[in-house]
Image 1 (tube, rainbow over the protein chains, first blue to last red):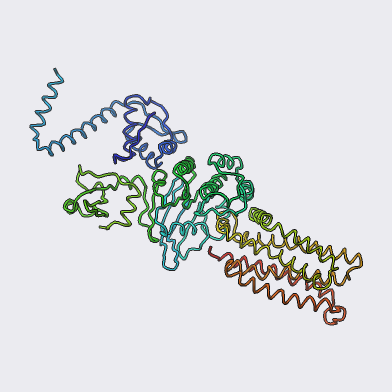
Image 2 (cartoon, one colour):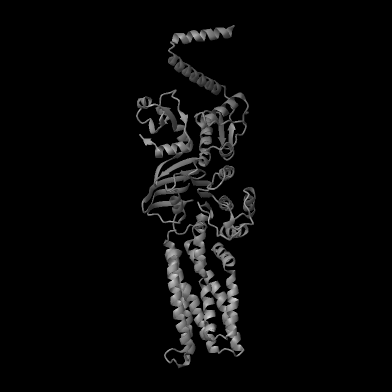
Length: 126
Length: 281
Length: 214
């Protein structure tokens, strides 16, 4: 399992871990039922706080990507298509929000954005 | 259970007053005590060990109240003070025999392993060792009796960067066990940045803050801007500022500044310096 | 407490080995002068006095190396720290006193010394050996070496003068001529009182050191 930590972007560490593990679970790099490293060993090996790794795991568990067996550890949850769709929708939403912000900064109207989208989709259809 | 609990701890000396301090070190965590020289870090640690008696408040270590008889608790405590005080003429072998007599769980082979790994000369008298080696000896001894709590007062003073990294690694490994905790004080903040779960800022005897280190780094950021921009920010967004001839450096709350503002991540060291030396808002 | 006593023994070995040589010399001189006269009285007295003050030297060494502070991190109480010093003091006193008493006994058996003198000298040495640390250790535990040293010097002068006078006085006194105090009782008192003071000193040191800030 590969995890990258970047202290310089300012993105919260627990989010970085969460996002990377999620991506690996979705892509299948982390298989169903695979055991994840313990919260402590992950923290110590990455040289970050256990509170952060715990937060990342708690978040993943809350979103249904992993589950905990008391006394044993954390395991990758079976793939849930509903969950994946949910995840993709969330990503789409955040991308659209960012596009909207940028558009506002450039002074583009909604019309301009829809036109842009049509052009792009047109390109794809070709 | 908390490994350490301070409730209203107070101590007065001429010209200096510590506290009242309220501090908790949850079991399995590492708490870094940051402060300039004379801030009260050593005083706090000495009060925890019974070296000095507090004027007020209470403290407990590993569940036992800090008081006259802490022998049981001290069996489970590994301590490195800012000056490691083994008698001058002793060598490593004699020191290890003394430690073996003191601690029920002394592990001689582990101690020897640390002596080898940390490159500590075993044939020299303690007074003939360099400051760094004396420190390393103290650290090796503290790690060799199955302690549950490490109390470290400036343990990396006098160590070069490579050794410091090694030693910090040892402390980090110590807490792979969820029952192990560390209280570490240092004014070399960069050592604490990677190691700690909690950070407490001590300044002139007062606790400025005690929070989860990662949350602190998420909450705050550094912004370089001009006076006009600063004025436009929401009240409460700016915690402290420092002025240079070319810009103003502001310590801001990330969630209180407009989206898209170029806010740099802040280090614990910068955070501390700005809170202590900057112009508070 | 074992660890503390072990540390003290190491310290004695490292720093005060030469005292053993001095004791041997003192024993020699005492034997030569048959325990009589100034030499025969001074050297044993000084040897026992010096060795019974080992506790004080050890406390000073502890302070110099900061071991007194670092020992607080060890699982031993303040009481252990005091008791350790008193035990080592007893041991170094006994290690000096016994050889001299044996020497006296040998000299008496050889007819070069009177048994009465043996008894008196032994008791005097006991008094010096127990009283010197009994008086000097508590102030040391309470106030530390810096101030304790002043008291030590004061005590040395006091002891030297007092014991000197006492020694010459008692040695010439015919003890059987004292009707008021039967000798057995006097002998018992001469041993019990210093011993009691020694124990009392220990209790006081414990009480004072318990409260001491380092």
